[in-house]
Image 1 (cartoon, rainbow, N blue to C red):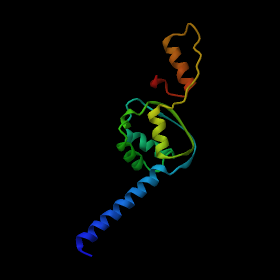
Image 2: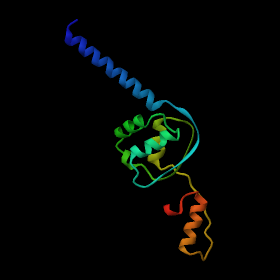
Image 3: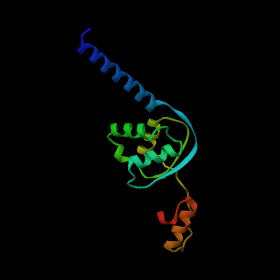
Image 4: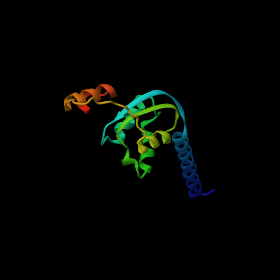
Length: 133
């Protein structure tokens, strides 16, 4: 076997291994204990990836970012409060973030409240910081 043929075969083998590992990382589902995470408007995917990994929602922030680079809509991640639970893959997490599958809160605002009082009520009802409102 010539040197070029061996080198070509080696590169082809490395490419196949890289694709297999990538496929496994993107499709591997792991069990997530119920986690809630708030993603602010304009959050960078790298920052979101680190938080998702820290909370145990994804295994690797690196693979999350790599997958996001291949999605044309990766910059269209929706802000909001997300609930993650059950068996999820990196693809499942991205789908949730891109679809804006956020937690909805029902809040009743009594008539006559001032703006600041409404904001305090919203912060309490949604377990968020008043400054976020």
